[in-house]
Length: 556
Image 1 (cartoon, one colour):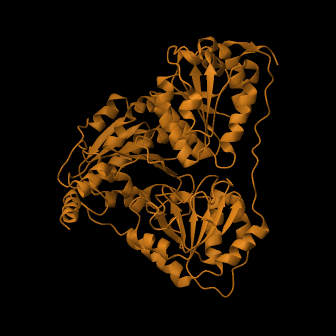
Image 2 (cartoon, one colour; image 1 turned 90 degrees about the horizontal axis):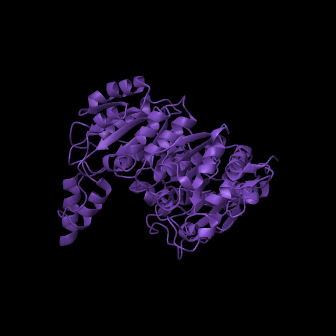
Image 3 (cartoon, one colour; image 1 turned 180 degrees about the horizontal axis):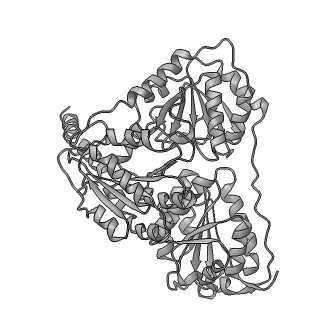
C-alpha cells in the first residue's frame, strides 16, 4: 500500500468493513481521521453533542446488525458519549466508538483532557484498547468489528492518540472481519421439542440480538405449528407481528398483570436469544433465581449467558435465527394440546389493549391506536424513556421487524437521535419519534442535525409538564410531596420552526390526524406537541389516583 497517514488508513479500513456512515462531533484530537473521511465516500453525520452521536450509532447497529460507528474527541467528548455506549452494552448492539486521545509522549502527566479509556469504559464495553502504532490500525479495527458482532454483540471503544493518527505508514488493509457463529442443529431442535411436549403450560420468550425479518417470520411459523404463546421482553415488540394469533404481549415495565401471572404459572420456558433480566421477571420476583419450578430451555448466542442468573435445564449456544430454522423444520407434535392455554394468552393481550380513558381533551389511548391503524406497516417508531412510552407499548401493534427502536436500558433522550439515524438509513420510510417533554429536551439540540442532513422525522412530543415516571413513583412512596419532578418547558412547536422545521401544537384529540398529515406533507423535520391534562400520569392511573394509592399504603 502507498504511504498514508493514520487517518487515511483508518478510513480505508472502515471502507473495507462496509461502513457507509459515521456519526461524529469533531475534535482537534482526531483531525487526521476527519481528513481521512474527506474523500472516502463514507458519510460523516455531524451531530451537536456526543451523546446524540453515540445514540445514532447505536440505533444504526440495531437497524443493520452491523456496528454503528461514532467519532468523539477526548475527555468531555468521551464522557458525553458514554451514554450511548451503555445503551449498546445493555441492548446487545454492535457499535464502535473511536475516541481521540492525547499524544503518546504526554501520557501520565494529566495532560489536557487526558483519560485512561480502558479504565473508564472497562465495565461498559466488550473491548477497550488504545492504538499506539500506526502500522496496527487495520489489525485493531478489524478486530473491533469482529468482537462487536460476535457472540452477544456489544460496543467496542478504540482510543486514537493524535500523533499516532497523524503519523504515516504503508500498512496494508485487512480483509473484512469474519464473525464466528454457533449454529443450532436438528438434534438441538428435537431436544427442545421433546421437552416442550412434556409441558402443560409452555411459554416462549423471544428477544436478544441477531434477529431479522426472516427470523421473525420463522418465529411466527414455529409458534403457529406448535400453537405456543409467544412473549417478548421489554422493547422487543417487533420480533413477532403483534396481530399474530400466538402473540401474547411484552414482559415490560408495567406489564399486563395477567401476562405476569401467566409467566408465573408457566411450567416450561423456551427462551430464544433473550436474557432473563429484572424487567422481564418483575424484579426477579415472578421467577425466583434461587429456585424456580419451571423447565428452562435457554438458547443464546453467547455460551456464557445461560445460567448467568437462572439455572437452565437445557442450554444451547446458538443464534435464535439458526434455532428457529431447525424448529420450523419439525412437524406439529401429536398428543399435546395447548389450545386453551394459548388462546387465553391471546385473549388477555387483546383485552389489555382495550383503551382506558385518561382525563383531558388530548387522549393518548386514542392517538396511539390511530397511529397503529394508519401508519404504513414498515413505519419505524422510536422512543426514549418515560411514562408516555407506556402508551406506545400498550396500544401500538408492531407489524414487522426493525420497526421499533427503543433502549432496553431505559435511557432518556434516545428516541430522537435514533429517529434521525433511522431516517438516514431508510429515507423512504416513515419515521416517528414519540418523546416526553423531559425526554425530548435531553437531545432536542439534534434538530439542527436533522435539518442539516435532511432527516425528515416526525416527533410527537407528549407534554405533561413533569418527569412522569419519577412523579408516579414519588406519589406512590411520598404522596403529595412533589419535589424535583416538575418541568418548565419551551414552546416545542415554535422551537422546531426556529430550527427551520415544521411545528404545531395539538390541544384536542380530534385535531391530531390533520396535524399529522400536515407534518408529513412538510417533508422536513416536524414536531407535533401534544398538551396533556396535568392529571395524566400513566396508562391506568391519574395523579390523584396514584397519590391516593400511596396514602392508603402509608396508613395500612
